[in-house]
Length: 300
View 1 (cartoon, rainbow, N blue to C red):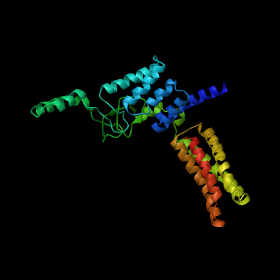
View 2 (cartoon, rainbow, N blue to C red):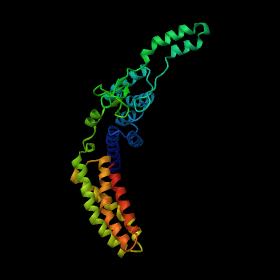
View 3 (cartoon, rainbow, N blue to C red):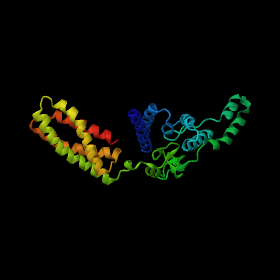
View 4 (cartoon, rainbow, N blue to C red):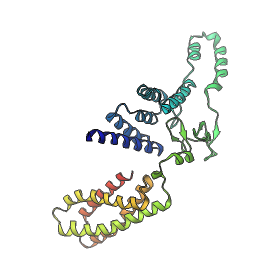
C-alpha cells in the first residue's frame, strides 16, 4: 500500500514539474518528466496531455491526445486540445511553432499538377496561384520587435509574435506576457529574490569555505578529497534550504545564476589566500564544485 501511494505521489509530482518546465519554455525537460510519469502510470490522462504539448508535429500531438481520450473519452481538456490540433491539421499545418513552420502541399492539386500534360502547364500554374493565399500565413510585425515580420500569433491574446518571443504551449505558442502569467508562481522571479539568493549564497559560502579549508586541507589532508565528495552535496542541499526560506521557494535560471555567482565569490578569497601561502587547495575546490552542482540541480 505504501509503495503504490509513493508511486502515485511521484507521478503527480512529475506531472506538476513537467507542466512547470513546459510553461517555462523547457520542452525537453518537460518531455522527460511526462514520459517518466507514463512509465509509472500509463493510464494517467494528464501525462498524455502534457506530453502532447512537448512535441511539435501535429500528428504526434494527435496520437498522444487520442491515447488520453481512449483512457477517458469525456476528458474536457483533451477533447478541446484535440479539436484545435485537428483544426491545424485540416488547415494544412504540419508543425507547431517553435522553429520552421511546415505546410503540406494540397494533395489534389499536387496530383493534378503531376498528371497534367505539358500543354496545360499554364492552366496548372493559374490554379496554383489561385489557391496559394489559402496556404500562406499573413505576415504581421512582432509587437515586441516591430522590425521582424511573422506569421505567428499568441494563442492567448492573439497578438503577433516572432519565433524569439514565442513560448511553446500545449497548442500553439504564447507571447512573453501570457507565458509569464501562466508560469507557476515559484518560477516568477523578481530582482529582489535574485539579490537575496545571491547574498545568502555568498555569506554561506564565505563561512562554510573557511571551515572546509581548515578541515579538508589542514586537518584531513590525506582523505580530504574523499570527504569533499560526500560532504559537498550535503552542504549544497543545506544552502538551498536557506535560499528557499529567503526567496519563498523560487526556482529557475535566475536563481541558479545567483547561487552560482554568490557561492563562487564567497569561496574565491579563501582559494586565492591558500594558493598564495600554501598552494592550490584542491580539496576545497572539489568540495565547492560538489556543493554548487547539487544546489543548481535543486533549484532548476
